[in-house]
View: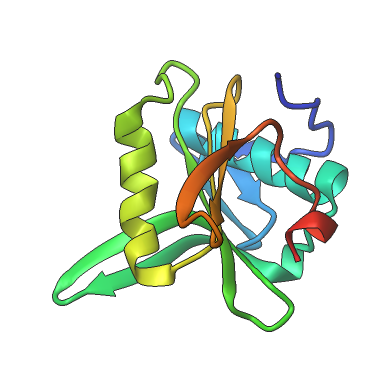
Length: 149
């Protein structure tokens, strides 16, 4: 499934003619890389089509493991401010392989969320941890926010 059109996206060019996009969650312009394009479109999709509250989402969330710093592309929080989902984005040209799932699962060793999502703009995967079965399962679609809580 392709992401829906994002008509309100704000793009500008720096003085040296490099494109930047307004990150709606961080409320600042950031370099418009292929991965950032996917991030902004996916976040827009979650907010406007799946009912995810922007106030409960964060981009580029830093995690620390000893002296090593990791960065989640996006994190969704519940109303209790506990992490609920981790999102990982890849450029459109990068397939969503087991390696990508492993990357986002590594972040989850720290956050312990029940949902993991990955997207390259063309393909989107969502995994949910089934506590009863104690295993991860693929969901057929990205759930609405109301179905996560």
